[in-house]
Length: 211
Image (cartoon, rainbow, N blue to C red; front, side, top):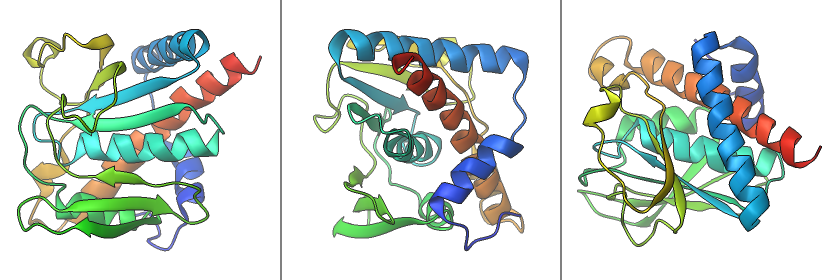
């Protein structure tokens, strides 16, 4: 189990070193990175929108790690968002697992159903809003690259007409471990996998645009 006192930077770097990625998965991640690089160089700005049904776990984790990655690799004009096909809430277990990686959550707008969090990390120069919303919510800036994270088949994911392009990057839902003895471990495992893959994507983007 990952040390709960680890810094965000250490968690991120350690995830990159420790996760296992198949050749097929790596090819997908590099395809996403290449598309981000192309759009970044053409527009000098790119928005990423991570999409999953409930926007409560995987898509939120991916958004938060992408927010960190952009700062880590000094890619100032890459913004990260997330959304779903329905509104639920930023799940409390998702919040807890990201806090264990050093992210700071401050309640900006309290609601029992769907609180809004201002999310940052130590020494960060900016923060992002975290709350459950649909993928086409006005808070998600256009144009964007859509990255779907549900582990259902790609054909079951929503049609997203406003996306520049769409990639299907599925993760197993940590919800399966809710209210079990390995709940915390499962959420940290998911966060680690996503962080490590986001690292690979953003490192490739950084290397490409700075070469």
